[in-house]
Image (cartoon, rainbow, N blue to C red; front, side, top):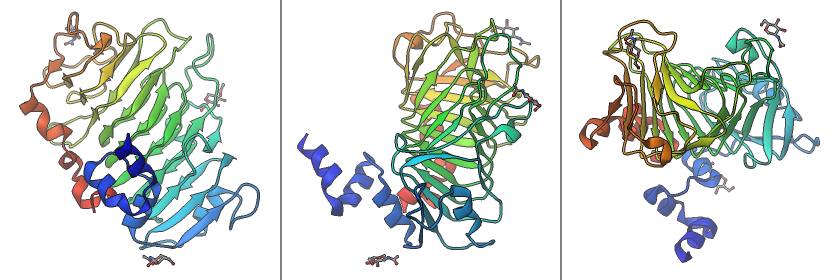
Length: 333
Ligand SMILES: *[C@@H]1O[C@H](CO)[C@@H](O)[C@H](O)[C@H]1NC(C)=O
Ligand SMILES: *[C@@H]1O[C@H](CO)[C@@H](O)[C@H](O)[C@H]1NC(C)=O
Ligand SMILES: *[C@@H]1O[C@H](CO)[C@@H](O)[C@H](O)[C@H]1NC(C)=O
């Protein structure tokens, strides 16, 4: 307890928190990116801008130094887009229960519906909720999807953020990504794409979809070739919620998803993984579990082509080197 208090309240001890990797907080991230350039967004008009997008628009094209966009407490009802030309943006909220970016749109096109889109490399977010409030998943409605965040560039990290929607919540499209202590909620394919991504200590909350009779799936990972370096790796988090889901379904012949040291509640169906709507060979699918625990981690009834990894097999995936993290994550500098 004493140690915890020390880490939480002692300002000069970021180094300790970093070394033990116990808490990554916003002062530590701010210090590690090494800049004081800060733009304040305040919904009540007491900052530089009232809208998040207006603050992003003020960052020069081809920006080459980190800039902090601090978003004060509030619900910002707008779509937010970080265009390809605006690198080195650190979007810093006041905590995911206090700062939220919210929109409501459902579409048959994922990208179009997204509340938040990050298309520039070198982007960090801390302490923000990203929500798509569209009423998808309601019985007898369209098959439309509602993306909360579209993450489509290299070297992107989210710390203590939350992603809320139902169908297709987090479009982890491409690039090397890192999510730590994030909350992700959804019903169908709600973490999908072809990112090369580590989800460290994240909380996955499963909700019911009232449109369908089949079970939804947490992940839908796309990997078309052996060479492609993509796949979602979940380490030390927990999965729970309402209704039954699969851990993942294959979207490409080399689809790779691993849950390691993760708590799985009864929300995970016995089969664990599905090849539903994928009609290729299951030989090269890499849908795997490694030392998971909890009632949903039972190995009985698992899809025969799914895998249980040994420590040796899991090692290269559950290391930060899987995403070359030491070269670009601010917490490793
Ligand atoms: C940021 O500001 C603080 C206080 O004014 C100063 O001590 C520090 O050197 C500055 N850091 C950078 C990277 O400019
Ligand atoms: C579903 O998506 C289509 C096309 O993207 C759109 O025109 C329509 O309004 C959406 N329906 C709902 C209920 O949002
Ligand atoms: C899909 O998986 C099921 C078992 O989980 C298996 O019986 C079936 O053969 C698989 N389909 C293909 C095309 O491999």
